[in-house]
Image 1 (cartoon, rainbow, N blue to C red):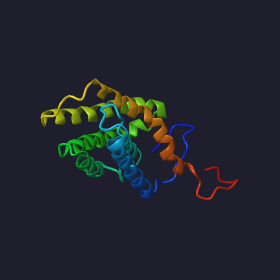
Image 2: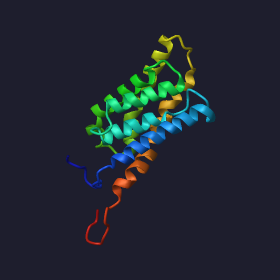
Image 3: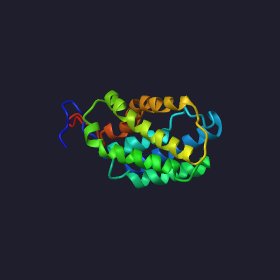
Image 4: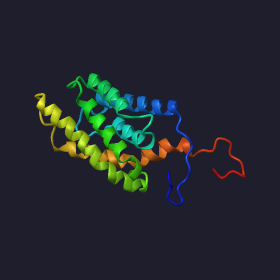
Length: 176
């Protein structure tokens, strides 16, 4: 892949780190739903943000099947319509993989603007499935969640790419 000027060459991502970050995001989502804010519609879905991030940066390791399994876990945890989050996460992962080569050419703030529609589509799918299953409309505060998720994108990029930026054996002759 041709890199843009000034972009740092990254080390390969550790599969254990990828899996641990996704499981941690799942646990944080579960903790948010249990106690902190309840199931407020404006709360950002951290698992969705990490699924998009890893689908963009590691599409061979985190793909649609991974998103589907984590979506089923969220459906079971929230006792929502089975497949609601699974379909939303799967579509989110598909769209992220479809645009991952183009997205990596942008700066991180520009990437946040590019992934905003993806998060909006995922929330729209979940809302439509909830409404089709007989649920009530959660309110217009649902529009805040995709904005918060895209605002989290730069922070997530910094934190999750930090281990890949470290040199395995730093010395003065190797600037990686």
